[in-house]
Amino acid sequence: MKKKIIGCFLLSCMFCIDVSGQETFKVMFYNLLNYPLEDAVPNREDDLEFILSDYQPDLFLVCELNNSTGANNVLNITRSSISTNYEMASYVSNTSDDTTGDQNDLQNLLYYDSTKFMLEDEIIVPTDLRDFNVYKLKVNTVDQATNPIEFYVIVCHLKASSGTQNQLRRFNMVVELDNYLSTLPSDSNILLGGDLNIYTGSEPAFQLLLQDTNNITLADPADRVGSWSNNPNFVDVFTQSTRTQTGLGGTTGGFDDRFDFILTSENMLTNATITYEPNSYQVYGNNGLSACYNSAINSTACAIPGSEFSFEVRDALHNFSDHLPVTLNLEIDENLLSIDDNVAEAKLKLEKNIVDSEIHIINIPTKLFTEEVVIYNSYGKMIKKIQLGLNSNLKINSSDLVNGMYFLTVPNYSVKPIKIIVSH
Image (cartoon, rainbow, N blue to C red; front, side, top):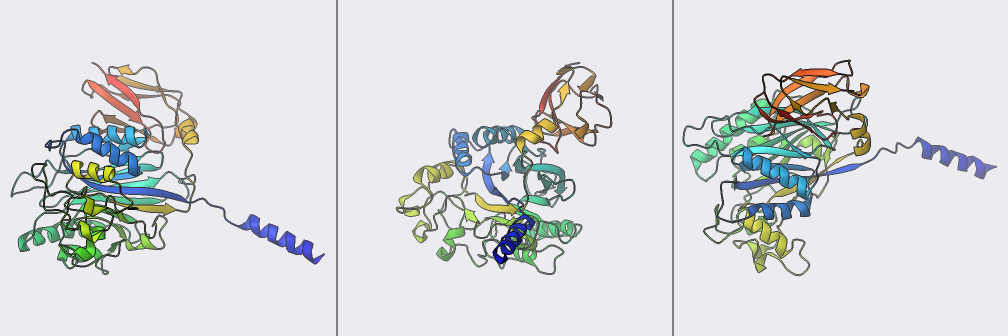
């Protein structure tokens, strides 16, 4: 009798356990080296496609994009090498005022798997040189309506070069970011990816990011704060330079600096709804060998038998950029909404795809009545945002749109964007 009671007790305990799922997301930040205007190395796109095909990020953060053509090229590469569900945030040229030279051809951008994330907001934090681009994301979980998992992704590129004046400009840029972060709830989840151009962890700009009196304190998940420039003891986190050969564009001099980072808010290291996976921080392509110091990343000094990153990977990285990407994993203890369910719930139909003054959406599922539809132009810039309402049909005025191609989608669902041709 006692055995039966114990068995029933154990069985009941099993059913009481919360069997929530766990999902892991791969993040990559990459300085694209003046893409696409830097053309010293031919067919750079092939190298980027190889890199992304190998790593398969869910979030892809980039800086040094030159123009909308490059932004759309990268989007197409993510779709061909990672997933057709990849989308990009709005491409926006740098708005910051640079009085010392034209820096408006260096933009930041976010690319993301739209089956896993929804882009809720896009914010620009200007400085005297380059913008901080801030993107608010929501994870596409089953219970997102009642228990949303939201976080902010910040992409940045601080002032380059050594010297007191450049340090001061980097610090002043971070002051502007800190002022913005002071407006957010202190428990916000923050992920920052950027080329910080910082030579040591004691530099004021870096110390301000990590200052524990901030409204939101950032942390280095790699836990490798120190004087890393030209210090072989930090070779495992070096990101620049991949090259010693001249004539390829970018910086030469070999592997000797840690300029590229992914930082997180402190809460994401421990107790946030979306957290950093311990020990997942890595410089992609960096085998962590002290012999690689001052060498080209594709050289024999940068690998030994059994090294994680092959010559093929390191050669593609060498050819594409003078920086290496930085990667880490994020985790949640929730289940994602399945692609099939998500698409089924969000299917939209148009009366016709070539329109003049009016876009007519028909047979709208009731599931979408509380949602918004968004219209993007062919460059990925958001043009209109419209509430669907409580009717199965909706007419949208398109008389103010210039002739061309547009895309209509529902950001909160993984529906394939619908192509629209406006022809007046």
